[in-house]
Length: 302
Image (cartoon, rainbow, N blue to C red; front, top):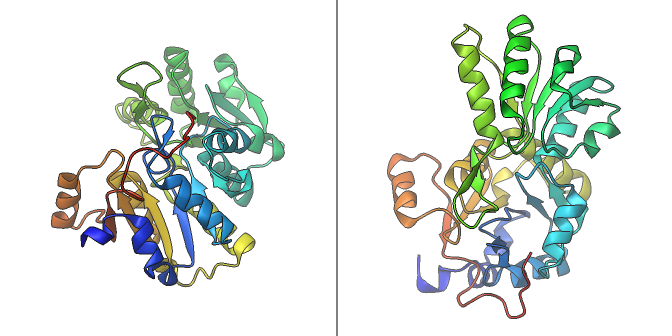
């Protein structure tokens, strides 16, 4: 890759945009880092919006509503429409409606955007002692009352091993709100529950919705077609821009989309080299970022 192609903006403007019909954006590590817009991200994103180029914004955050998430990005200068966001919560709604889960009773563990569930007439139960009376389980974010949840769900699933279990956000961890370190994610809670039940002879089938799983992509592609008229018969003309190999790139590869990896997030060049060597989750394009330079002038914390 030449120096001129180290960054997305000059590559895109030099004619690369003619090869694509839509863009999918990740947020953390792509548009922002540590609550600050990354160099050129705001310029490129807003230009795409002004040009009316088909796009969607994908997040694995299943706790906040799309309006809340869009407001956070808007405060940093991104012209984001909440209707252009797709999350594990909305992907879950899409899946549940498609598979006939409306008007049932779900136990929801911890933080989860429940607006989409209410739109389907789903009754929400929060009391873990009432979990056995529910039709399905949703593992939300954060770990309050984890021991009680594991005890109740473990014993309920022994008696009802076919009860559906959903984990909208599959991330095992994410950057902590504390000054340093990471928080344990809902994906780790699901893995813990699966492991405990495995020792009881039960193979739990957890349904994940966020990246890299297809739930979030199924809804995204449906929206691209319905809202923007994007031709889905040529998936390689849809470009996913992300910063992780196991989430953003893996999901794009699974769905047959093109992928652009930015080294502005959690992935190093050494990790990219290993991906190419093993041909596992290898991105189509690799860039240092959207443009060179420091943070956008006037960037505000998100």
